[in-house]
Image (cartoon, rainbow over all chains, first blue to last red; front, side):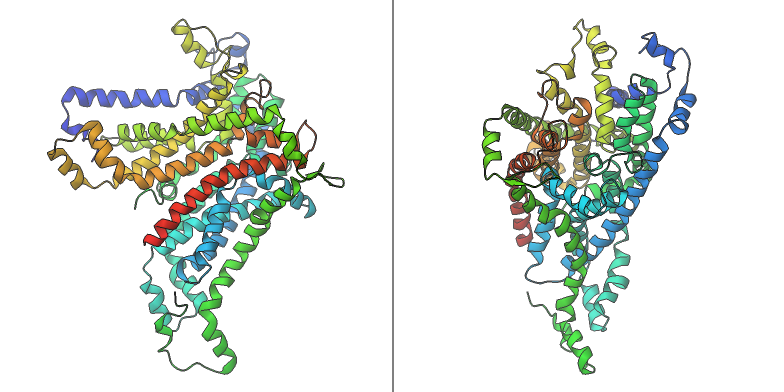
Length: 282
Length: 312
């Protein structure tokens, strides 16, 4: 293990390490802690310029219930759910298939198609913006959740294919050969042999895509406009415009907007990190 | 490269004629059936639009009316456009400074690569800025920088340094936004390195210790070579992240003050979809330049992957 395990160090060094870590963590999360503190302050504190002193009262419950009951926030959150969940299902389904095709079969165009997916995944969004917006308008899907979902599925397929293909490549190929010797049809090999083995990859990818799509801002601004279809990342700006200078509410709103992917991360940590670091080790 | 594995050859004789054609060609056709939906989606929404953008960049078009063909005039306009150069310069600053996320991520990973109690919680808490949306990171940091109540100026005050309006000062604004971007990006690199460090060969470390290598020499000669895959991925995601920077700029400054914090991705959006009027052609031309910059990196990434694939 590198660096040398701290247990081998002297007592004072161990003690210093145990004290250093929490201190570093507080420093690291300081901007976020500040916002969390803002979100439980009363309105009056900001009027009296009591930004960093002890709060004159704790208004966490009233601040957060304002966000939930007196603003469009729940609607934006629900829109985010309705955009994110279908995208995750669609992108994972498509990439299970493309990953299977590229991971199992050997044919001449294989590597080229794979690289096309990988390259497309790296492209800057702006080169797609004008045509995709135009296309969405033509489909009559501008300012709808469906329009956003279709684009997200298509774009995420690039990354998901990269992920799934590499995962399937690492599976033992003998399994497929054995199934073929038994005369099992190819689609049944996909459904009954490969897919069950892909469960960890599917879980990892689902959590990752959930986070990516929930946090998307650019496409939300380009393809949607109002409270009826905008996700929470875009909605938070209208929310902030509505509560301009009401920092306690804006802070509470931001925390609410950020929470679902954070919860997802802490619940599914193992899968999340497995997905993110695929390829970081050989 | 044979499309049929030998195992199919010694199967019993094929069934009736219509089925046998499928039987014989099943392995050649199946991958295309599985690829079809994915390729269709990807082509319609990603591959074809790239070429369409190249085409749009040759027109003057407001997105609604008729498009007028202007040849390379959009590119000529860009050549004389100061705002374009400001954005380009900022893109370079982003690219260079964003790479700091890699050594910073490595440093935190080395700090946390211990087995004391509770270290797993610390690792997750250090990582979690990456999970928060950039919109919220932008809001959090714009309050952190706020000249009247921001925590940054409170802390500067302790050292007697005067209030700095980071986001309102054209000298500091880009650096301020990059610092905000480095926060989640460093967390990302950290997690890549933590995973990499887990897989470092303990025998090599012990051998190194016997040879009296320790500290920085050990890191440089024994640990870093083994972390190469993690470094490569960190490099890829950081470059892409730097060139994709849009959310933070849009939330924190809207390109200001006086357009000094724009980058190409943001300037393009401004030209095509906001107060500058809907100049799709000029916007597309800027996007083409951004795409070409990215293409250099994409080619390099694919080249590295290709060598790896061949090596297997």
